[in-house]
Length: 283
Image (cartoon, rainbow, N blue to C red):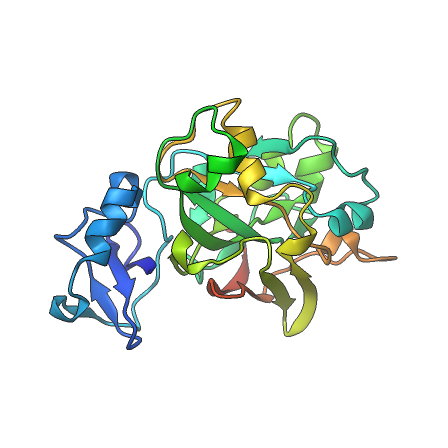
């Protein structure tokens, strides 16, 4: 299933993309796309619904973030061997964990605002893993049982804040609008192998990132298991799993940074596409 949330900011309705391409209203079937609706039981309830009996929603409406009320937005750093190489970093021996503020989350096609005092804003197409059932100290062999589905994430970063302002990476990752997710939550049964998904990102029509989840250092099952050793994972939590090469900071000899007026397009095979206009911060 492809689940989404559609409507104005703060007034999104839970919805599903039907096989005929129409968007059907799930109001009354689930409260929202989040929480217990993402459990196996919640997803089974949606799956058992006759979609033809549901009202159609206007497909031209805004698409919101594909998950509501995200509790934790957990990021994995340097998780692609080829991306680590372009940044000059060693391949991690264990996953690098850091957090991204949930206030960064926006819809997949909402405007991205460059934050005040930004110098080095950058892009990162990533595979997002959405938790469906609580995971605590889970084994890798069972880890995917706790996954509701997957989505596209643009893990936007301000590299000056991230690496030159001291402290943790979270400062460079958490600006408002720096977390577009969606357009859909694609349930795990539709993703045969999360380690075999092509992914790409363009800026103003130029292809900067063209990679695959095949080059992850630590795969999805390992990451879910690993993170669950340090904190419980709750329904609606998102783990964004790292980016392939082609980020702006990795371009030699002169890095390329986002600027107002840029248009980003990005996608992952089977998970949909995003497009964001980049705008300047204003008071």
